[in-house]
Image (cartoon, rainbow, N blue to C red; front, top):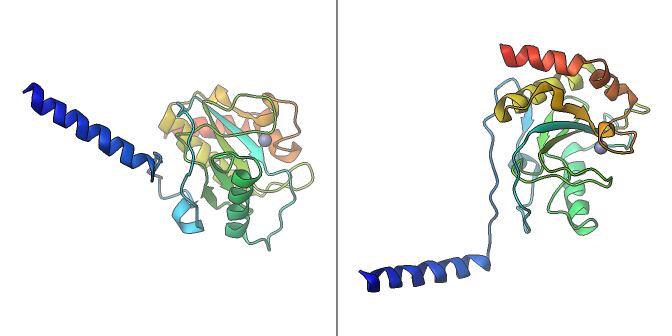
Length: 204
Ligand SMILES: [Zn+2]
């Protein structure tokens, strides 16, 4: 019996060494309701993780903007792929800093897998935060109703899935010195619209 478990242990050891040469990192997949306009990672050409971080448990939802003006004519999948390449090559992050990105039509692009904390150029600790970015600069652009609707539905889905209290739905500027997510988006956080509508959707 001892001899048998020794062989078993040895083979487990060999297998785990072998897997290090071509490692795949855990990616949590979520089951979305049909009313969310999700563009899955596989649909926009996400490249698999080549590095990892300690995983985290979501207890907050934090809203960002891209900070760069975005036009209706933009090639969104190309923009998302470029952001992934830049995040890895320039910033040495494991992936795009956000978990979700919403375009001007309210389509929701899956980005960094939700089981890993995001990244930031500012000083707050993103562990525990689900990070949603709305593409565009809302210091100068106006948030479209279709974007706000997607943002509220996605936030409600995440709050329900991870049991996040609506008081923990905030904007980036609530944690760090930044204009993010821009005044025309932040006003819906500040006046309670997003928290109220999310609470209404969760109760349904
Ligand atoms: Zn931000």
